[in-house]
Length: 155
Image (cartoon, rainbow, N blue to C red; front, side):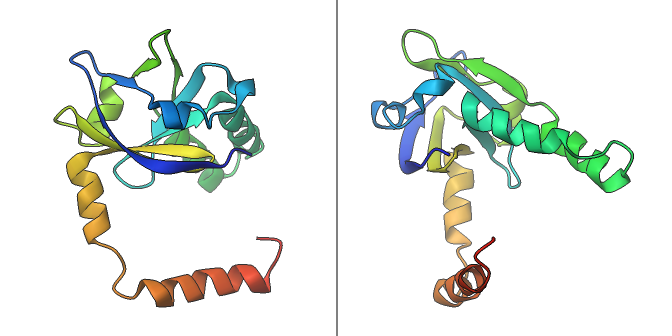
């Protein structure tokens, strides 16, 4: 699994292309080459996965049953609009218009938030709003979430 990290202020060009920042590009797994997958995030952002990471996620999702309604619905919702992206020689990827619309990107300014195995793509306004909605007591949230993980090493 990749361990991506960083927050990057970026701009889309007029065609909706995004230059992958050099510091982020250095972190990408070689096995993924220049191929990414993008899909809708759980919040109003898009999520970009290096190919290697997407393949692992797709393998897990494909194990879900088409005969169980909740699993079928999850597959459908999670995978809707997922698209393959290829980075060109100028380190750019073309972000599909429907994904930009989903994330509420109305201007060229965007924010990339890289963590774990993914890169979230946010409109600048959406990212600032998300940050402003930080939990009132982040310390209590961290204690609750992380203490569960510490008590159950299989999580």
